[in-house]
Length: 181
Image 1: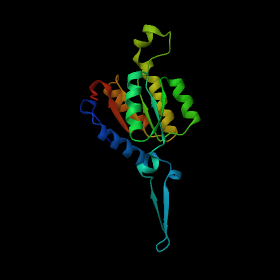
Image 2: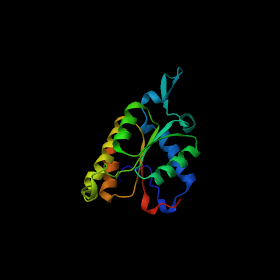
Image 3: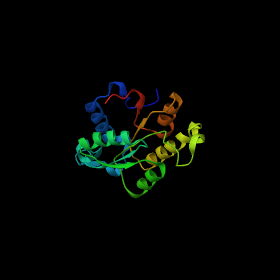
Image 4: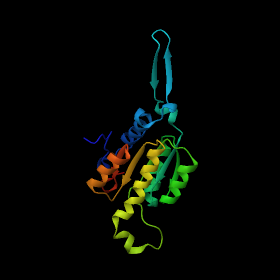
């Protein structure tokens, strides 16, 4: 209904399925710029065919992982490096935004509900709309840069998930609560 490509349930998590999802996300023509595609010209009928790069061409590219929990950063990094990607790990909105401005990425994995800056204390925790604001701002940044994005989050309502798909065009949404390594 909302155009999601795939939903991967963490309670039934499978490494092979995750790797396949990452490959399909990277090869998806709807997330790549035309300049990233190969153009084929057929002089016999003067047609041009546009083909996206396959996953093998993108392998080894840099994946941005934005996660405030060290354990989750480690799990996601391991899964991605196992299949040949370079991983840039960030634990905050500011760090991730800086990385997005300095480098190009073939994929981003973003925690929608990043914790607040040091010193914010309980007021930050009590206001979840402020928590998710940074995550949505990162989604807007990855979308503006045509980086396919998978949200990996533990705190989100169905409305948050719908909003991420509808407004930010994310590729997939993974819930931490039901993750089974």
